[in-house]
Length: 177
Image 1: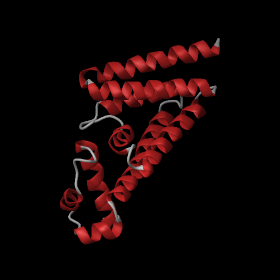
Image 2: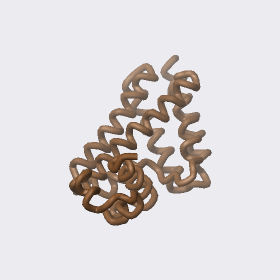
Image 3: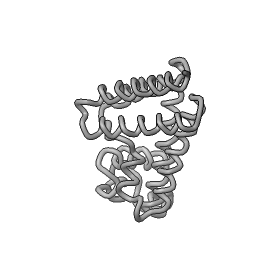
């Protein structure tokens, strides 16, 4: 595995589990087994590493979601089945983009922009699954709301995904009438 990939794998695990501010570059170095000098050659600043981590997370997260939805009929309802599965994963800590924005969005325009870009990409994907812009916006709110609920109250994670899915079905049914 190349240095940058090892660094991104280590940073991704640490940032998501512990939070970005709580993880120093030396923590990433130690977890990756890459020298500090090589770390800074690959990523000249912590902000650059965080942006790369988020971009990588976006690709993987969206890839997992779109594959699942395609395998389950290609409907917006499948999004909520995927959420239920995601919420049940070991180490689930909510939306990495919302978490990063909450930690750094006020001080790092680069991090804020990656988080916004991810949410726009998700919204555009939802728009491709449903009939109109308003419904896509509503589904995004349901996805984000269920994700926050699952993060804050893990005992209600399955219930949050199912409740959001039921609300999504009701919205889509109302649009069909």
